[in-house]
Amino acid sequence: TVSVSDSGELAAIALSFAGSDWLRWRVRDLETGEDLPDRIEWSKFSSAAWTTDDAGFFYARYPEPPADARYEAPNRDMQVRYHRLGTDSADDPIVLQTPEEPEWGFTPEVSHDGATLVVTIFRGTDPETRIYVADLTSGIEALEVRPLLDRADAVYLHIATLGHTIYLRTDLDAPLGRVIAIDLDRPTEIREVIPEGRDALEQAALVGGRLAVDYLHDAHHRLAVHELDGRHAFDVELPAIGTIEAMSGKPDDDELFV
Image (cartoon, rainbow, N blue to C red):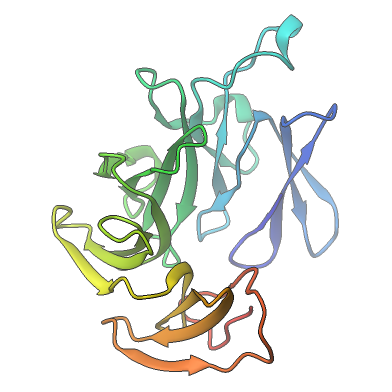
C-alpha cells in the first residue's frame, strides 16, 4: 500500500515480504525519488495516516513474533503506533492497544484539518465496528484515544471529520444504509443526515463541502450529491449503466473522482 503525505512531498510505502501478509514500511522523498532511512517492521493489515505537518504517520503493527513462528503466529494484540520521521521505529509510542481484547484490529485515519485521529476498530471479519477518536491539537505526547461508538452494534464507516463533527455511513437501524453525524463534544447524540431510502447506500464521500452518495438501484449504481444538512442537491448523470468501483476526493476539493 502507499500513503502520500498532505504536502505531496513524501510517501509511506509498504511492501510485503516472503509471500506473507507482513509489511515493511519505508518512506520515499517524492522529489528526489530516494528512500529515507526510516524502516518499520511487523506491520500487517495496515495503512498509514500522516499528520498534516508531514512529521510522521500512524500505522498498525503486531508485537514481533518468535523467530521460529514468524509466519505461523496468530494475529493478536495489534497496536496503533506513531512513527516520527528520523527516529528509530523501535521507540515509536503506542497510541492504542487493547490487551483485554487481543483479537481487535485498528485502522487509523487523520481528519483533513489534522485535528482529530479517528480509529476504526474491527474484529476479524465481523461486519460490526467501533469508532474511537483522539484530539491531535495538543500533540502526540498528550494523545488520549477515547471511545465514541463502542457497542459494536452496527457497521460504522468513517466518511470524514470536519471540525468537531464526524460523518459516518452505518446500517444502524437501517439495513440499506444511511449517513449520520456526531458532534465529538456530544457523543451520545446521533444526528441523521441522509436517511435510509429504497436503494442500498454503498459508498459516501465528503468532497467540496457536499456528500456524494453511491446507491445500488435496480442492480446498477446511481450517484447523488447532498448538502451537509442532508438536502438532495442533484444527481450526477453517468455515461451508462454500470458500477462505481470507488470515489475519491477531499473536503476542500472542487472535483470528485469516480
